[in-house]
Every structure is written in C-alpha cells, then in structure tokens.
Image (cartoon, rainbow, N blue to C red; front, side, top):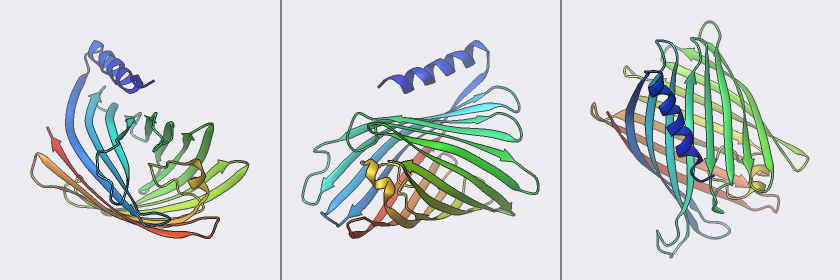
Length: 269
C-alpha cells in the first residue's frame, strides 16, 4: 500500500508515453503549515509538504494533472523539540479535464501513523452550466477503523474576476448525520495564478481540516475561516500564504480557538 501512489503515477505516465502524448513537469514546491493549540494542553501542529505537479496533455481538450505529495507531520507539545518524531502521509491528487463542460478532481492519501486517518479519498466533479454558473458534487471518505463518508452538492458562480462558491456537506458517523457549510470567495488578478481566496465554514463537522487524528472530531461544532494569497514573485517562483482561524466546541463543554499559518513556495518550470 505504501508504494501505491508511486506505482499509480508511473503507470499513467507510461501509458501516456506509449500513446505519444506530451508530459510536462510543471512545478515542484514545499509548504509548511503550523497550528497552535492551547487546550486541553499546549500543542503545535506542524506539517511540511513536498510536492510536484505533472501534466499530461492528451489532446487539445483533454488533459490530466497529477500532484504527488509527501506530508511530514509533527504534533509537538510546548517545550518538546521539533523533529523528535515525524509521521508521514503519502498523497496523490489528480485533475482530469474530461470535456469542455466536465472536469473531475480526485485525491487519495495513506498513512500508517496515528496523526492522520489511515485512508482518505475524495472524488468531486464540476459541470459548467450557463452564465458563469457551475454545479459541483462529490464525496469524501475517511477511514480509521471503518469508512466514514461525507457528501456535498454545491454551486459556483463567476462574476467578473470573482468566483463565489457555496458547498453544504453532510457527514455520516455512528448512525448520526452532521451538517456543515463552506462559503468561499476568490478574486483573480490579471495573471490567473495570482489570486486571493477567503473562506468561511460552520457546522457540526471539522472535516474542513485535512489532518484529523481522530474520527470523533468529525462530530464537533466547528466554525472558522482562512485567507489564502497566491502570488507569482517572478516567472519561476510562486508564493503561497494562508492565515487561518478555527473554533472547536466539544460535547464535554470545552471550547478552544486554533490559529494557524501556512507558507509555501513553488518553482515553476
């Protein structure tokens, strides 16, 4: 299982070569995310991600983009040294352009550590409607000891240089149904690689967080927001910064605020 992502990527690249399709290594990058917990104990989350972007052009309409990623995580109590214990998660994202109106996004991640779910899988499609409207829908699966699914059907709307997204989610766990909503606004600049994205989420589900270490966190009442800024520094370097805030409310009455910050840089070929 630990080599599944590499084998899958290699197989797809081999097929593309056999069909004499072009394959481009578009970028490589590194990102570091930190979150700061103060209840019930002071703990810092630190995740460093190393990734690459590979695009396969099938024809003028169809293409596939692969983003293999290695996530190295630490959950560090205040006072302990960083890099004392590092846990790994292997991840592969795939973007498939099926037609001018339909695209597909898929993600699979695997980890044998206790800081991530053992398996994480996401499949989501986007269908272009008229007048700048898009319809999105898909499913997410977490697996610790058994699969837990969540589902979404949402809408996107382009208004000039802005993209507005509304996605409600339903997660099913232990015979209970938990709902949440995610609202995002993205402002594109002249170069589409440059944009600012703001997001707000609220509901009885913490699934907005990719690094859940317990299935029981999915039932929390959680609200929060983040602001992402992506900017080309030069023709070869791309900067990503994220500031985030999350409030988690637990069934035992405990409430905690979790600020976070992410910094990443990509080299564009």
